[in-house]
Length: 444
Ligand SMILES: Nc1nc2c(c(=O)[nH]1)N[C@H]1C(S)=C(S)[C@@H](COP(=O)(O)O)O[C@H]1N2
Ligand SMILES: [Mo]
Image 1 (cartoon, protein in one colour):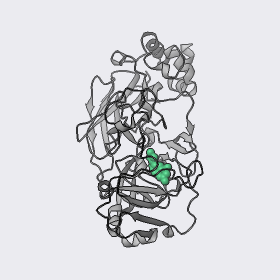
Image 2 (image 1 turned 45 degrees about the vertical axis):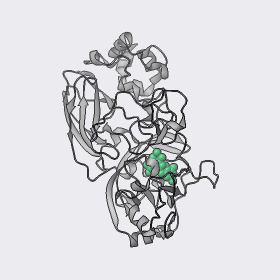
Image 3 (image 1 turned 90 degrees about the vertical axis):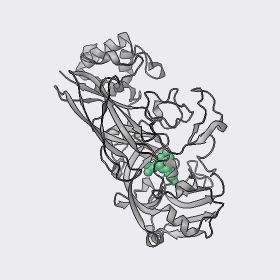
């Protein structure tokens, strides 16, 4: 039977019939039971399936699920078919949520079609009026409440353009064990587009912050999933200091044109380096609060991480949680897709990708071809501006044909890095930043 599999190709087999492939390699059905079963016989079966060599199998950590198998779910991925969008992977359709596979994120500036999609409510019909007539209210703890049209925002405030990371707070969630609740993101809930808008700071200064101002509360025009008009789909906020940061902007353009409707046309916030949920789409109100905002997505264990580590899988005590602020350091390989068969005879591989670290910068990126036994330093480029991701390049060589995994990990300017398994388990799976790994096959 192994021969039949081999002829069909190892990666094809995993794509076409992951359940059977799993049953072969792990000797049982796929799912949670897979973890920890790739040993002895399984490894031999996998060797037969890939056509022989797994040159570094001796340094494969025991219990590791090879990358070729770890990233597929048992169902074939559903691919997004939407005008103006690339072939993103649908994680949910009510609300619409779609991830950008790492290998589609190779551009330094993420084009509109490759920006991941995350909605909590119903995507509103595109605003049909003159976009310059769209109104934004600033109220609460300000000296003068403002109601500004988009036209006035453009007229009265200085435009700025930055390349900015926008990353979902749950990016990396799929790595949690036991499984955390929510969209099972790999590493693809990240974009680094060029946003144009006005500084939130300038607008808040025009309204005049009262000394009682503590936090922002953001509102948008998308209806709640239930259709209940009194409930916002999501309403998060940030401390005043983050709102006053010069890269926190009210954006009306992305990559030189209007914001596509699914990404918040005609006006949205971009709060870079923090969970994407603070970057309100279809923005129509910013309420300045005299306390921490308590809107939809601010309370309980939403967008919060444990202060004291909890026992994985146990019941959460919300009083042990703090609001997630900076996103953790992460790196991805973008020039080769997981499951690529390289040209026969390939021994030298040039890897490329991006790395970012929320509020911080990335100081080092390392790559490995032998399951982390040895690492090589990548060349890490400078960020286009603060909060833009950094592009890295690295060269690797391999000794022979066979099945390999290329791993990448980054270290941020505070010395924090990425682990092999998701740490600080929490029920909604925030803060997971395991190393990215891809599987490749080099034929003889
Ligand atoms: N109005 C509104 N804004 C929103 C959301 C939403 O559901 N409604 N989702 C948030 C979340 S959780 C994320 S990660 C980002 C995703 O933005 P994108 O779909 O443009 O990538 O938008 C944020 N802003
Ligand atoms: Mo998100």
